[in-house]
Amino acid sequence: MARAGTLTISPNSDHVSTLSRLADVVESRRDGNPDTSYVARLLAKGPDSFLKKIGEEATETVMAAKDANHEKIINETADLWFHCLVMLAHFGLRPEQVLAEKRRAKPPNVDINS
Amino acid sequence: MARAGTLTISPNSDHVSTLSRLADVVESRRDGNPDTSYVARLLAKGPDSFLKKIGEEATETVMAAKDANHEKIINETADLWFHCLVMLAHFGLRPEQVLAEKRRAKPPNVDINS
Amino acid sequence: MARAGTLTISPNSDHVSTLSRLADVVESRRDGNPDTSYVARLLAKGPDSFLKKIGEEATETVMAAKDANHEKIINETADLWFHCLVMLAHFGLRPEQVLAEKRRAKPPNVDINS
Amino acid sequence: MARAGTLTISPNSDHVSTLSRLADVVESRRDGNPDTSYVARLLAKGPDSFLKKIGEEATETVMAAKDANHEKIINETADLWFHCLVMLAHFGLRPEQVLAEKRRAKPPNVDINS
Image (cartoon, each protein chain N blue to C red):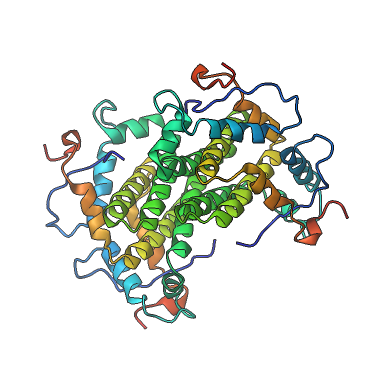
């Protein structure tokens, strides 16, 4: 598919993660011009517009993986995660909250520090 | 669903992003014991085991979003991203490559630096 | 996956389609015992239980098709359609209404009678 | 979405089910003109074109069900089943084989004839 929503961010020199910075960019587009910003357009249309993309990109990620096509896997996963960031922005949520969810120490058998 | 694959990582003090560290943890489980490690089990079973989860968790993310249930949105997105990290590990790919995909400067109208 | 919800119906001798008869069977289970009927169990649990299955089975159908595995394609499509029938029963809708949707004469270029 | 692939079939006067007749129509388009036939276009493009639609329409069906929007549920389910018929046609399979899968008598506890 077309590389919708590609974003440019400055070099990561300040210890803020790329994912956090991408989320910042997505949020900054919220009140942008729907004619020039893909993110503004999705957020203006409402949840169904980006939720539908999550289902679509998940299927395309699975198809790319079945083909073991590395370039496509990267592209489709990027599109999937990107539309997740748009969804999080819509609900006022942050990717840091998502990643924190995976850092909680249960079950203990997957604690890498022990 | 059960919080499968929750991981504990040490505090982020060394400027390596949480996502990168989660990917490191997933990779470190690759040759682990399938009886005690969920990630080792998925990777031992082969691609269909985690690809099926990507489709399932994407649907659950969409359902959580339709309910506007913030806690569920965070949980299901975490599960979706987690199974993507397992898929990336299977193919020897890194989340940094996925995020880099979104940093490329096209289309120009979404360049935040200009 | 396990062949959940396999149904036995008597031979189609009375000009009622197999799909309609499957829908009748699903509906007849609505008030059944959740302990012995998979359909009764899904309908008792509410929409999320079978909607999640629709996403899951759709992904498995796609994966079976990528493998060009005919037996799996048939099995997964059967599971997908079956959970759609459960969804339709939940909403008091019929498969005949779904098929009627596809019989409407637009666009004209796909009218096989012309 | 646009009602892609709507088909007109003559009244069901000969005891052949609507689903079988829709499958016949889809198959008859296989060697049609991709410029005028949506089915011919999908089949000419290859599996990824219609598999991607199966994932997309499944998600839209789930979203319509979360909204309890009956008209949308019917429309999206119709689109989902239609693209399944295109997939079956691609592999030389028939919907009768899919439905037969669900008629097999296991598990016994869902045998409606007993």
